[in-house]
Amino acid sequence: MTAILQVRKRGTITLPVRLRKKYNLEEGDTLTIIDLEGGIFLSPRPILLPKLAGRIEELRGKYDLSLDELIKGVAEQRKEYCRGDNDW
Image (cartoon, rainbow, N blue to C red; front, side, top):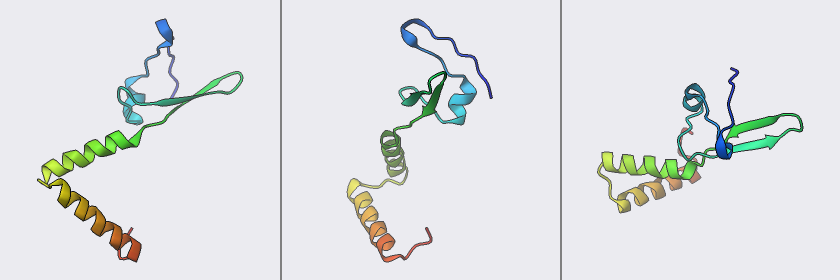
């Protein structure tokens, strides 16, 4: 895919919707730009922790789990993982 972007005031650019959807980019996400001496490379660099925390909160609410229940479940999963009793 090729896209033409225009640099606006203060150096802002707008990424096409299809690229934002393809790479799951949302407002505030971080991108890395690399100067290749004659061209530039722009790559998504999503910060996963806020998205992961939001998803955990969403699921915790959906299944009506307390924070203590969630922590206990994580500890149990960790024990199983360390024993090798999993299909991962």
